[in-house]
Amino acid sequence: MEENLTVKRLREAFPDSILEVGSFHGEVTVLMKQEEIVQLCRFLKNDPELEYDYLSNVTAVDCLKQRDGPRFDVVYHLYSLRHKWRVRLKTRVEEGTPVPSITPVWEGANWYEREVYDLFGIPFEGHPDFRRIILPEDFEGHPLRKDYPVQASPPWWEEEAHGRA
Image 1: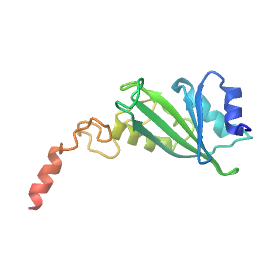
Image 2: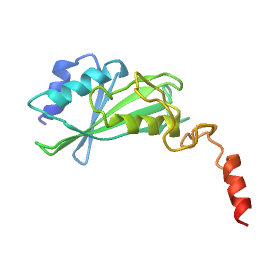
Image 3: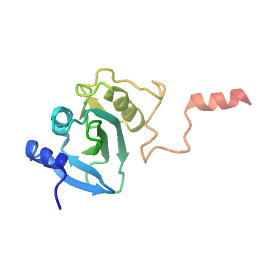
Image 4: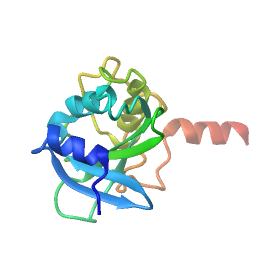
């Protein structure tokens, strides 16, 4: 089976950063070390053979109690408008460990990284405007974590509910 051009170019340019490659229904996922995420993204965007010029999303997955090792996956979805190719980049991160911000590569990552921090608590080192984007600044916790108490309601929620009754 012939290796995907994106994977081939990444292996050539970043031989020590690619930890695992998978494909499901034609979508390629590359698990990589987080230390070179900015350089790797810049390479994918600027390489004339690839041109992944569109960052469609940055999100995270809380893998609490599902595996040994880092708790979170940070997931980047990239698209090449010219070639109509998609690639998913993933990096694993321990709780509290900052991930390098990719806003120097795609300014649109600003909002996505803020959302990931807000909902999962994953910090992004070098982010230009690191503050909550969805929840109030005084909100405690990160509601998409698997250990977030589902029954817990923030005080402002309870006040609104009682005020409407």
